[in-house]
Amino acid sequence: MKQPIYGKNPAGARLERIKKSPNYKNGQFQNQNHTPTLTEGHSYLEIIYQYFFKKEKRRFPSSIIPSVKTNLHEIKRTEDILVWFGHSSYYLQLDGYRMLVDPVFSGNASPLKGTNKAFPGSDIYKPEDIPELDILFITHDHYDHLDYSTVIQLKDRADIIFCGLGVTSHLEYWGFNLSKVVEPDWDENYWYKDLSISTTTARHFSGRSFTRNKTLWLSYVLKSPSMNIFLGGDSGYGTHFKTIGEKFGPFDLVILEDGQYDIKWKYIHLLPEDVLKAAQDLKAKKLLPVHNSKFAMSNHAWDDPLKRVAALNKNYNIPLITPIIGEIVYLKQQQDFKEWWLDLK
Image (cartoon, rainbow, N blue to C red; front, side, top):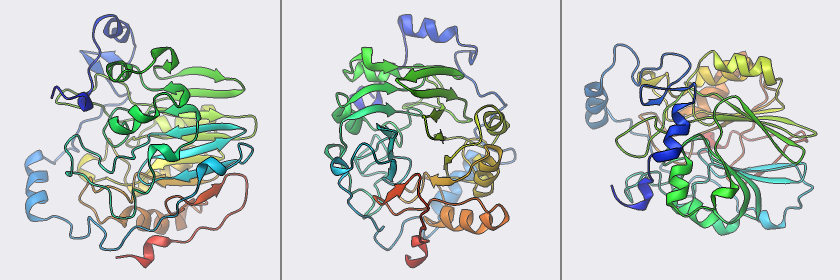
């Protein structure tokens, strides 16, 4: 637990600042709505039993996840694009700005090597593949979003870094230049030149060790001169999506988690049907479902998230963005995407 990968919880002057947050009570950050870790009627004993005796046989793909190695360094800044790296990591270029969200390029989503490895084919990008950045966004401090070995290699490659209140404790411990770090609370607004950045709530939790909720989890609204985009991070369904949609929507693109869910923890991760309800609440013109196709962190088939969202979307008809890993998504162009997961086992 003394290894750098675990980070450090806030202390001293930083903790005193956190205590002044209206979202911090009784020694930890709180969700806006009551959010039990487990859904009523379920227990940890049930989860352990299911893990050992009723494990889903297709949690891991037997096929190699398809991908393409796009050279990001060669993409002109003038191109408005997105490239997804699997799970919740993606690269954005918008109105000349280069941005990266929750990069995990170590091939592992756990502090213990080899315990949560990326699916074969899904881990083709490395930190050196990322060009110089204007902004690095971190939504929260879980290992599948804040990857120690990745951000250490990127810490001097971004002009500014956004992370939730308290996450700077980890970054300071890891040697980051704190003059480049912004750590907002929920419902704060910033400008990066002519790019508006608003921090919005999420319904989740945080922590890299045995203690929880000492740092804040958040989502972001990016409003450039030409587009309005929602970066969802991790969140269970709640009234906050409608609130965000009414205040900031409609959105040209909404990026929401779809994967690692279970009815037993529906308050902290979106079920597929919740993904589409949230997108509708947000007034999404297009939806990119992420948090899938790279790690097995829940007891569902690896392709279940995309299959279910695609099927359920027939009742919503929201244009789905479903690229393979590394494929260029042209943000301002009409583009058709294949249901690539249907070809795999």
